Length: 123
Length: 123
Image 1 (cartoon, each protein chain N blue to C red):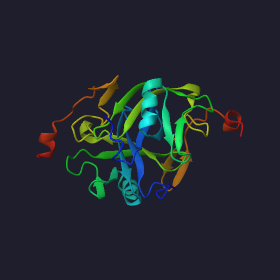
Image 2: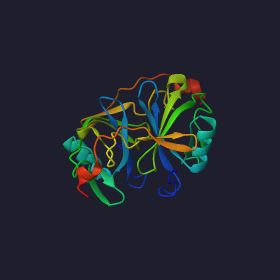
Image 3: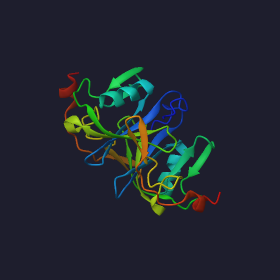
Image 4: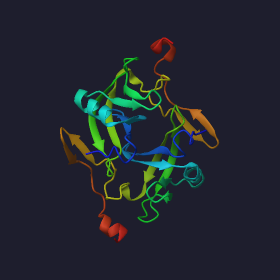
């Protein structure tokens, strides 16, 4: 169904807010993460930096309830339509990880900050 | 501004329809493709299979006019908001490459087919 091998075991997974249509984030899934996502209905990714499954929201509580899963034409990328609990997908507290817009040679923050990461992650 | 090195020279680029909010496709950009996209205002990707720049629409005419470019929190993924000329991003003729939905163990075509690829690509 999905071609995990083509990309060395990991495929890109895009999360889109099912209600607003905002693209929230892009992360990676291995087969195990994909199967857990399908089984539980909660987005589970694979963290390349930590080298293990990343159950989105396990620390912050901001889980993603998966409404629909789409597969692209090449079967090597997936799109999740999710309900983002807490209103923010990004660990920086912004609703979307894509909170910065390119403007000429500058980058400007245009996203909406929903929470203060210091409060949420207690770090 | 973008971390091309982290992912071995290529970063994922998500194209979203600026008007409808539909996620159209995910492809890759190297630095050259990114710079060309910024310079021309038309989406230019890097084709991994062909090993060269892929000026989206160069064969079909279905170019993507770039309205906005967003950079994610890690600076290793970009989101393009585009106007998709011809109404279809996918080489199969569907509006979005994500035209198949997972339904249990089945995959069902739910997307809208805009053109017949045989007519467009003359192959």
